[in-house]
Image 1: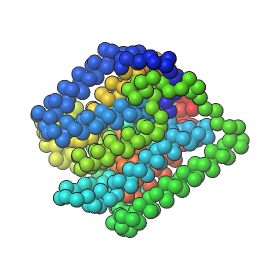
Image 2 (image 1 turned 45 degrees about the horizontal axis):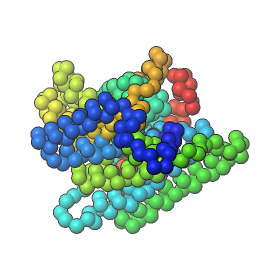
Image 3 (image 1 turned 90 degrees about the horizontal axis):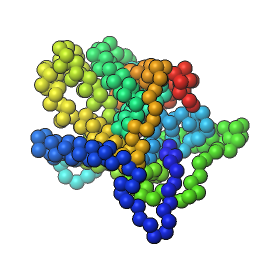
Length: 406
């Protein structure tokens, strides 16, 4: 989570917007955001331009809040600190209260909104378990890979290509993975909107309770949780320079995710965009992507190239990276980390491959399956969470092999 030093200004002093910022990074990020929004608005649609800007907002909030799903899952296990995972549960609960009625058609008007409702099968369990391992080795989930790369992480230069390659490979082998399952289960369809909300919120409350039990048991054995206090008070200009509290970052994620479904018709998701990027590159390299079952609609490179700017996930992913870049530039932290060594690079690539392959098999990542799936009322989201968390436990044990601390 965010751990920057506070920086209180003397009473009466004012903080410049760019004080302490990496100005070149800020101007490049702003320029690319303006260019992207302008081109999408004029060449594609206003809707896609708005989604691009929403994606930028998500990247800005994720970086300033250091809202990493991966670290939240790890710290509860290794330090008995459940704050990160509890923040994720709170975001899902608030999002669910909005999503389930929206998807069920409770809003006035004729607009239709879809949820991230996916099948439940053995394939999902295997894929989510793979993803859980990969997220700890790659040191980031789908959104984490994007916002840390946007923030200048050098390690993610290796995780993201692995993620894209794994996503593409799984899509090409899609026909191999038709394992037994029960199909998609929408809790709102089965139990009505009130029933779906009651079940979903009760499930989240149950997980929250289990986290509390684990925290108390851990502290009895290991002693009290050590926190970093910020005795100097709030950091001046924190809204644009960061860090944000988990409450602020989580609230931003809820608002922007609801904005995503209202504008785009579907909730925020990430990993299909990676598969699309990989398929486009492979098609341009001469691979007949349309010959594969998963890509039956993609009969030519031109169709895939067009999809890069019409697909909601692809557009938002780019916006997310640029929003994180802007946030890192304003904080003065862009690209500050060291280059990874060979062992760390190997872990980054392997983690990316496992996440990409697993996300395709399991219909999403921490955003599209865990957050979006559960918040949409999909049983698949709960199955994904259980299997991915189990995989994450194994991934945590493997991290030291690749030079990663726990």
